Image (cartoon, rainbow, N blue to C red; front, side, top):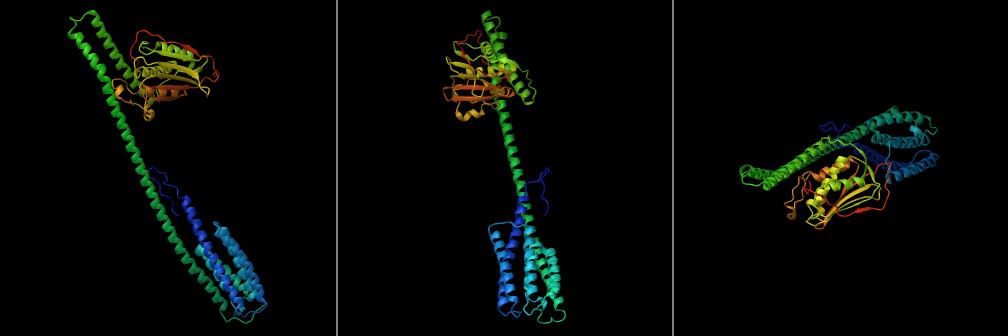
Length: 480
């Protein structure tokens, strides 16, 4: 069997070794079934010949019957084994061939050898044909040579000669043995050659089909990837255009007012315009910073400096630094002390700020915001930010942490954002060995959580939680 063809990249397309083994085993099993059928036919013929028209000595009849009976038991066992699905190997064929050869030689001897009037040489023909079916032309010729030698020597040793064979009888019989072996071997070889060609053709076609399917799958994957890249690029352009338009328009308008109306505006108005320009510039700076952060994350250039952090005091400090108007968004903090993690203070602060910023952006005026820090059942530290905002549809939750993903809703059309905050937050949490989770009910609010493993030498201990009331912060600004 030829080797399987390889794909264009050098790898073998498909593995058909099991198919080849099954095919070879099936051919061998078929050969054994054919020989066992022939064995029963020859056994029946030998039994008929031994009792009807047998001109050999009467003393040989029971001996031949005994040999045929024992042979029938062997044939019965072989038949049952093959019917029950046994896959024979070459040793099985050699074993049955040896038994058949012993039977044929014994009958030859006890029936009177080649001098007997009733000839049982059909048993030897069965042996030759069976060897051709099992082993092809070489096996058939080898069996014919062995059969010829046994026929000449064992047939001449018998003690029951009835007549002297004509000159050339033994030589002619040997010639017939070799002729039958040659014909049977050539026929079986031709059949096997055709079967091998058919199998090789089927494997080559299957290989070509596998290669075609692999290429189609590759092209589909490539097309899907290009479509995804195109969508990301389109979303990127759309978000950038949308996010740049508002602050740039604000900067331009307020700057034009300062330039053209500077002699007409009073000091208070001028200060308000300058503050507005500053806020818009800060918004643009945050947007550019998000893009730079994503680029550094994807290029594995986002560095971390881990240290032991006591989470309750750290989270409290971050929440107090967060700029918001507590009159618009009441915020409550619930922390449990004693939770220590290995974390990058600056990166973890950025992640928490992103979650707080989203909670403020998507919450209505007066909506409560809660920050909680506590140990979960697995012994990790869990940080959750809950809001009473617009909520998220269940089918949209898997999209939240993708780049440039914003779930536009008519209630949030005026809410800005780059669609990168949650992506950045998730990457930061993953770098800490943690994971993100979202729980949300459409129209009733959301809870964003991240879980951090605790420091190994600081196991979580459940203590009485510290509950702080409404936190107040001055200088309210953008949520970020």
